[in-house]
Image 1 (cartoon, rainbow, N blue to C red):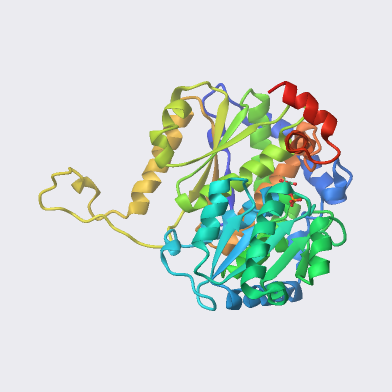
Image 2 (cartoon, rainbow, N blue to C red):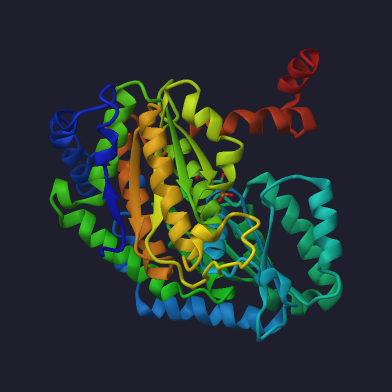
Length: 451
Ligand code: PA5
């Protein structure tokens, strides 16, 4: 089985959705979108560094990341990765996908099983207090990640965590416990890192935040957590080659982009990414940023949502089955669980479950997937299926790249620049004005009158 297989046959049902002819008609547009990503002649072409990124990562670069990770792993039980949006979600998603669901029950220990925690992805006072409280009996280190180097949420978290590291270990030793991932020359974080002598990694200029998981933004925290970053990059590189070379019918990124574009044009405005593995929940969060920020502009774009099933069938299932018929679903289906667990026969059979005796839990999950897919399709929710043979570093790397490539292609089909995010600034301006940041006095005055 391929590392990622995209099946679109279930978008042709019910009859009201799209047809194979619609998909065939989209072929030239989708192929052109893919070609533009490679030629660099499309919108946002100064942010295409991710297209050939996986294959261009050298063993020496990976060694350097691993070496820096090992220093942090040996210094600290808890390493706090500070970042938000594209400087957070990729590492969080991959770490969760490739970790044991209950790894957090083990006591973290430097050099053995240090743990990565996340901060700077919110401005919650309680989260901050609880984080500092939870880390106080452990040795700590930090990776601060910000491409712009000026984002408020991680900057606040870093100030607090840096103070704590300096208080505990002294200013000089703090530099050994802090690594910054930021722009090569611009931004407050670059200045601070250079002044304090922190080790740094560079986020390439031509790779936007939401496409940066395979740069040190994602790779460093993942290496610290013990993730097989080489496998991750190798899987992405295989997908890079496949999506660059394969024909339309054999190209998972083109198939996915074509299917969702056709569905959007047929009136399906919401895409729900569904998975049946709880450890893929944060892949959904990463995917939402990727598609939401890339497509949601100029009054256009599919609204990306995500669910984890079967859990959410007992909360969102009703709406998906019978609510407004404006949605389609993209189902991530994992063929083979990593572990085996069978349901035993029970002599009494008081729970009436003996019809499942001898079956693996995965078989039951498999039937839940098929049953749900057919129910949703019958209810008017077309399904795209993304099949993975298993969850491992290679397949997750391939999945991330497939989604990135399809996102670029879809954005071009939508007619937007998929690589900018001008709308993200609006809240920041208001927040600065309300907080009295110098330079925002007039806006602050106007806003306060409206409160
Ligand atoms: O995709 C994006 O560009 C954004 O979500 C950014 O990743 C996010 O705002 C964090 O930015 P920065 O890395 O500059 O702190």
